[in-house]
Image (tube, rainbow, N blue to C red; front, top):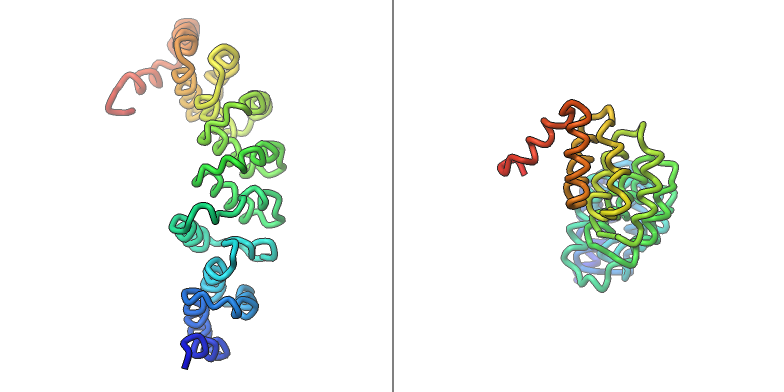
Length: 248
């Protein structure tokens, strides 16, 4: 008897353990005719069966994340890790355009697709990250900022500089903006902008501001020296950190 028929029999079993095993087998065999049956298990009350079903769909569909267009659940940490591992091992020409999921109604899907853009350095999705800078959700904005910095999206420096004028009271966003400007900032135009954050009430933000200024070259170093002299060596402890090679 063909193996997929045995798996289909298990899928009709009452216990979730057998269903989960059947779903995994069908996914690994690549038996695409089972896709509608597997998709029904996505919304099982059992989390393990949900997760196995999702991974099976990733394997069964031509576009690995096509099911996300119909998905209404949450992407658990287990799901995100396993999808990422799977995507790492396929031909990268088969990777979907991650930006197509940036406006998904499910926040976990949105954040996952943005993180995949960053992990796989998908330049075709970078422009979509810029739109996320104006999102209502702070997590979305923060991830967009970090991704643009890591992807060295110099062409969008002005948008990050503009955003910096509105993030002061959001400590995590301020930190991410400093990190981003340290990567893609302009040595002529952004030194004073970053320098404002040396007075930020949050230590980690001040730390990242110092780091960013150091990355902005001679102008940044000169700004740090002037600030230290004019502000009673307020940032000297941070400067000492960067002066210690073992800490960098």
